[in-house]
Image 1: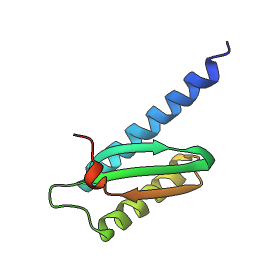
Image 2 (image 1 turned 90 degrees about the vertical axis):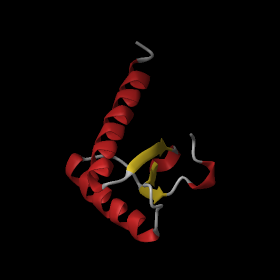
Image 3 (image 1 turned 135 degrees about the horizontal axis):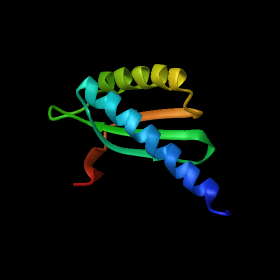
Image 4 (image 1 turned 60 degrees about the vertical axis):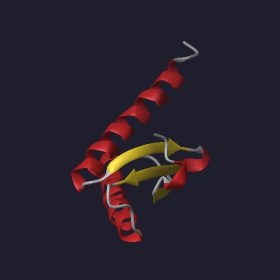
Length: 89
């Protein structure tokens, strides 16, 4: 009853994560983390064995932007970056 919206939100986040992970893996990257913050911010952390460049982030960002338009994913801002030195092992 009172928990239904929370479960629905969790299901939506998991669907977006599967969608993003499938797309990123198809591009040859690894999804390290997906973070959804307040005010519509969606952060995606990617990696690959050779390291991540700005061009890699741009390619993934462009692909995800198109994907989100087609799939009607609700977000205001998208950030794609490398996990950096604080990458979870």
